Length: 85
Image 1: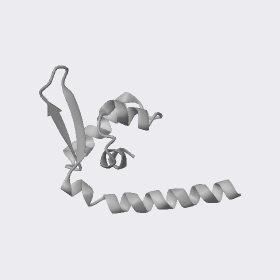
Image 2 (image 1 turned 45 degrees about the vertical axis):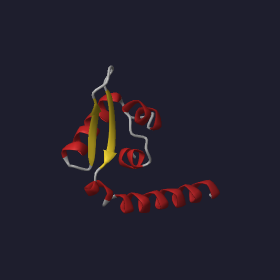
Image 3 (image 1 turned 60 degrees about the vertical axis):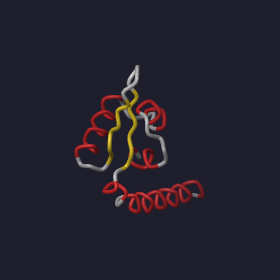
Image 4 (image 1 turned 135 degrees about the horizontal axis):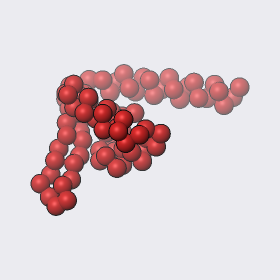
């Protein structure tokens, strides 16, 4: 969900937190750090007061987006099955 959100311009920490309400602040921080270490996302710090941080999917991270799309389609189809049952 984090990679998908960042790829759709949900690229600030507070906006990501609102988009994924069930994730704790600490878990989001940990996952963002791990994705950054794995070179899937890039953290951009703007030298402003107060500092502004944005995230973007790297070229390497974009290679996983088709897989996320397939998972999204599967999830939507599965939800439709549950609703119609």
